[in-house]
Image (cartoon, rainbow, N blue to C red):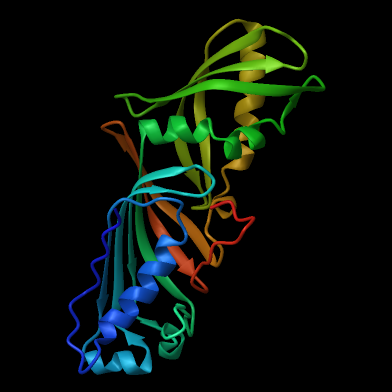
Length: 255
């Protein structure tokens, strides 16, 4: 059950906090297939500025969120700077920004989240775009392990073309953020025989081309990652989001 807690804004008559709560919470929940706990807080002093659409800040904390593409997020925190919204659009159940705004963010993925994500049709389909020696690749049983030395282990079984046998890949790597825009697997240690190493190198090269943040951002947003922390079986990203307009889920959206 989703819990929405939106501020405590005293407003004459029907509370303006109630109107904003309904619109913002509905819009956020619609971006996800399933959500756990959501907490949102609007800050506005004096509160009357809400009538002109002025908000001093907006804080959002979500837990246990499942995106429509099957990717799961253990936790996400989003802290918006001062923002101006179209207050009239609230009555239509919409959140409309009058101008772009920026937010700081923190995203937490667990080891289980990462393993599940790499086995979703959304990610498997992208991986299968890679061909090896002219043959398509078929992935199964991918397992992600977050090690105590802050490295990441990838184990997967790949069937090449019409072969009935699978190649077992076992690789250990570290994560690097390039230009705040791309996440890369680096310092990769490849296990297995020569065939497995060759296939592993091709796979890592392919995966590194996929991990551009623009491919995973919600519509209307641009993401930048400042820092990655790996530990306690969790992968944590710290960064910023440039929000041009409030995202809306579309039928063909990846998130």
